[in-house]
Amino acid sequence: MSKKGILVIGSSNTDMTVKTKALPRPGETVLGGVFTMGAGGKGANQAVAAQRLGGNVKFICKVGNDIFGDNSIAHYKKEGLDTAGIIRSELPSGVALISVDEHAENCIVVASGANGDLLEADIDASAKDIRECGILLLQLETPIPSVLKAAKMAHEAGATVVLNPAPACPLPDELFKYIDLFIPNETELSTFSGMPVEDVASAEKAAAAMQAKGVGKLIVTMGSKGALICEDGRSVFVPAHKVKAVDTTAAGDTFCGALCVAVSEGKSLKEAAEFACAASALTVQKMGAQNSIPFRSDINL
Image 1 (cartoon, rainbow, N blue to C red):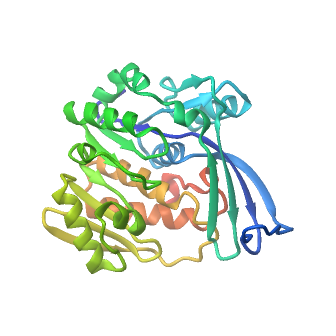
Image 2 (image 1 turned 45 degrees about the horizontal axis):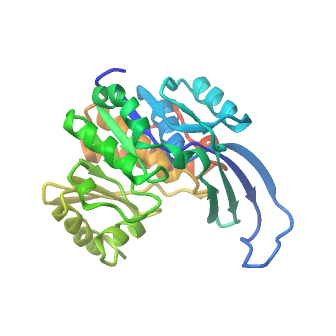
């Protein structure tokens, strides 16, 4: 792949989504709703977002030898992704069960399957792609030792390493020194910094704590409020577009993919965040994960 290309290593799921009036409480059955099935997984969402928004993207993941795996690979090829690095596993492909209420809030249960089988040996087998990429985009839906190994390999090769630390989980301190750009939401930033994050001021303090651990630059996604950029001892807030949200699934993934595209094109972090905010604002206005991700032609800035 091109030295300026974006390499995404992460998860691939099949999303099964039900839109209903209210999310069920424990032990409750909620009748009614609309069912859809489509491609998902944080890694796949971010790869598709980057590709649709103009990036040169290769996707490395692990899927099962089943119909979900077959359908996922066919879908990624149709999207234009370079799928040569996708690996088959003896485990079932990952699936996610998603419920979305009338306020666009969601709850998600994931059966990781083959995603949990993306091992350090697979990272070694992908070393050429990792060392040749311009930007490596990672998340936390695959085993942490593999994330660490890929980040270190890309960092040592001079690539820009981007980590979206979701879903939040314990991470080795070593990982942070390989991260050039850290993109947590407010909850994730609070988890990793050990500090409450409730507004811009508290986000700035928590971001400084992460930079003390070795993280380079941060962009804190703050939902409908916008995004906070922290770099070189300064912070800039980029407000979100005011839209009526229908489904927030994949909004953060769209933001990450869009941001990497803009960075790969030489834009500043502020310009990249403005582009990413515009893309994610379009995403929340549609149902589903990858179904809702916009194309470059959809964005007017």
